[in-house]
Image 1 (cartoon, rainbow, N blue to C red):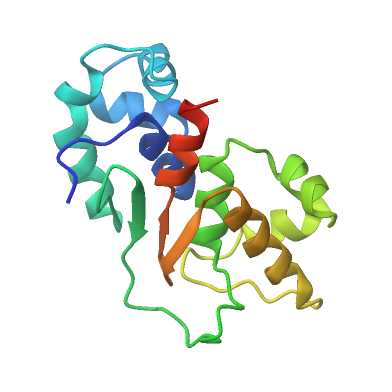
Image 2 (cartoon, rainbow, N blue to C red):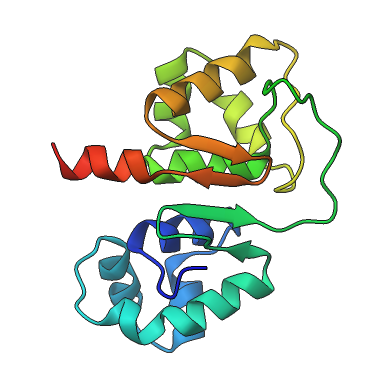
Length: 170
């Protein structure tokens, strides 16, 4: 388990829970600007000082950080899914989208689907699997994320080290 969280993990966890920058600022008793800067990696000691409180808060909400390159949603309500890898749940979708820092519109355009499909999928519960009428949409989403080095290590986790490494080596 990570001792500290990273800027990307903060942004992803916050968005998975539909929390704004102000919500996290209120929890930590800091300014909105401080949270925004932290998510951009433009603070010095923020994560050293605030990681224990953030880790505790997110854990109470069902989100843990197994490593600095992963995020996991804890749930006892996971539906039975297609074990062939042709499934994607709201947690995986929104987490992956926010790791890449993409809007719903940008993601929809990148894979050639209607933005409404992404929007509706992100209104589900985190552990609910996306079930579009066109089964190829799940394949296209998973393939797009995997091409951008985001791996789905299990049904409620994402791993993005290669994505981070790729971004740092540009």
